[in-house]
Image (cartoon, rainbow, N blue to C red):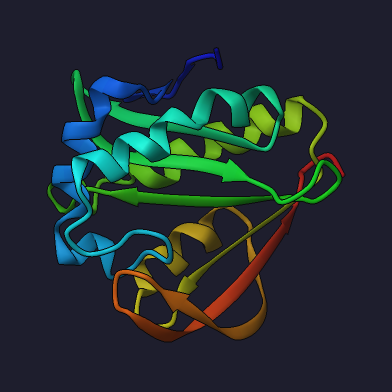
Length: 174
């Protein structure tokens, strides 16, 4: 099982089956799923549970590391890093419940996750955000990501292809 990470205000812990309900409830908010590429509107608890069930194997294979963002014992978001092959850089992704927006929690969580990955020897990271989600762009900028291009990315939540800013970051010690 993957380790827990602690920030100043958050516990970043591996997700598990008991998180399926809270995650499903939070991602059903259109303010959340519309900004994500891989979450459908009206995602069911069974779909969330199916995704969660693959997380242990993905972590053991060092292909994906997903953490629940827990504030005062309540799941308020999810952050993770995934890659398509062993030599590829990790792509950082996250979402946060609207009730927790504007408090710097995503930046705090991402700094901790990036530091953990860097201590493991990772040196390059990818991420991005839809053009109409400047708040996510500000988070990535604070983390040292720079724009690396612009593409069109399919959003399952919107059911359409959307303009996307691709971003990249080198580790501080690279």
